[in-house]
Image (cartoon, rainbow, N blue to C red; front, side):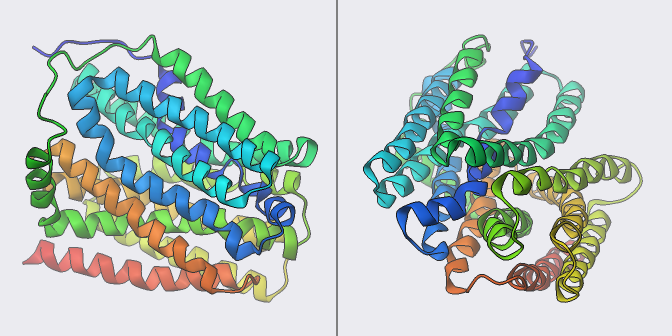
Length: 394
């Protein structure tokens, strides 16, 4: 019989939000960072691009590390790396070296990526399926709140204490989480001494990458993730530089989009009782397209930033909440090795977002840039869904 442990919900919340909070907490400071280092907005976007690259790579390393050394040592290593790298970002400001900031962001992603992976691992190892699903539902609701709250905090800190204060806050976040993880149980009682050997890892991952349903579903999730990180990367420049609001106001306005995530999660849970995953995904795509078209319309009509930018985002994020969990269900139902399958799914998810954000520097910042890219992403989203739908038929 599986051993049962109790997990602190607050600790799980901080773990599951670790990477997403670190990804966006500093985003209100992006215009200030561009001015401080005297670089363009496109160059500043490298801090987000390299974070996503680190986050993507991290999805493949923590599973084997946790199997080889244990769950808690893997957590300690990732959190400690995040704390050190946050201080490296502060050092970049002291030395006035933008390249050091980019390196710090990359290392921060590698470290903070441990949170999401290990949170799901511990939940499924400490609880039976029914309670695990309940725990996951609760923390995923909170997961929708944390990015918006992080941006609000980052906006306040940037306005009153300067952009480096965002990275001090990230380091404090890591220190609190490190302290809390010391009280977590170690659920890996028998270590896998071969977990890090290439002749063990490569065949396992190659097998997963040959699964078309896993790949397509992961790509669908990645396209949804793109909407969030596209906004986190270029949203501050549009809202602050073009709409004329300050960092603090931008941070407060970012409390609105998570409302779409929260209500979307609740709606997704309700719809899951009555409808199949493919129907809910299709509904989510329709809602995202509607929100993107509304954003384009309101910006063309020169409406204020809240109406033109943030209210349509609530609709877009609502649609995202319908797609993400159901796409992950389709992916996980197609694999037998859940550990390696989930790692590959997350790798494709974050890898897709990384490639898209990497190419944002090809475009000049304008008010119409965000809805235009959103609508293009909608078209790709529809094509990816059709591929899944055709595979389910045949």
